[in-house]
Image (cartoon, rainbow, N blue to C red):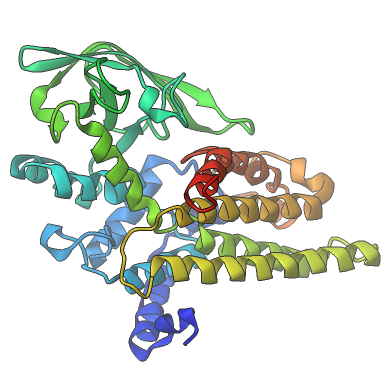
Length: 398
């Protein structure tokens, strides 16, 4: 049986139709328009509004079990759910709370921490960001030096975190902090959760190449964090971090989002016909679109095969590195081709928050923005160079 047939049962077709209808009928048009522009800098208000719409349906945290307020989806349902949201131009989930911290608290948190933290994530009232990378600790995350010194019943934090996505709109941060310098660098790291309104925290914006504000550098100057905000055992945060990062196995390749992006590109080429007076170029563009469609189809089959292994294993090992590398390469190729098709219009007027520039968008005047913005995907979540090293060591034995 072809690996994707698992999603074509009568039950899964009905579920897909339910999700598709819900997105079509309930996703606000102004939010859909921003997502269709390939924006990753959605305002907090838009993310929160959509989350609460999903929450009213019981779908706000699709990866959560029912005992914590989630829908208790099967892995197949989660895959289809994510696909339909992407194809319907719905926003990505609020990943730091719903997809990362929530399940980690379920696995490592005390009952008091679960009662205190999980409801705010579930209801969409508390925004979280991730404090992992530092100026000299990115791909080599274990080299982090942001210090947390234990003083009485508190930790005192000094140092900074880098590339903190959504740190400027978040309420709380979870992160890794150095609590001991003896032993291996993976030892002496503690997982802490902290209120970003705490005295001594400064959030400094970092503008991306195309001008959007998504990431920040966060500075800590004698910031005090209660011991009760530590997750798991002191000095043992590295194991928790590895667990948290393993949760990203769903959507590593962003196949669903790339399918939506490719569909928008095909519509643009069909409706605007930018190469109608240059038939040789038109043929070349149409061939490249077809190639991207085949590459994405092959990646999807590979992703499903890895995620839903016949042996029932839950963990995706070095295969995740391959998915990340290939997924980001195809993603960037799609946006590059979109900019090529838009030609001079690609560097047109800045996108209008009100959506009044719909005609400009149709002409491709916003295509340069995702092209430049998505250059980052080959770097974050472990650069593609690091991913290739993982493949070379774990698969090829080099």
